[in-house]
Length: 85
Image (cartoon, rainbow, N blue to C red; front, top):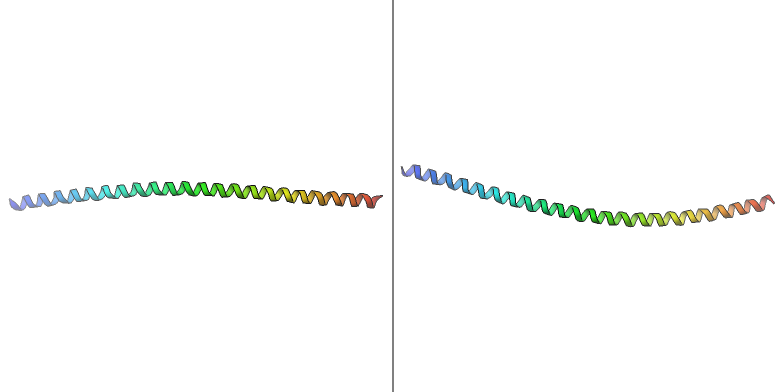
């Protein structure tokens, strides 16, 4: 009879320990998922800011380039007109 009581107690303790371990794993997983989501959000914000800055710089560079090309075309047209006279 004592053996039966000891075995029951031991199995009960194993079940309790398993439940605690499962809860700890669930808590750790939830924390990791939350931190991953926060990290992803931060990375997306930084990527957005960097992309926006790059787009502005590219637009500014294109604008300057087009102005330079327009000025060159205007000078060439004027020289061509002068040569045609």
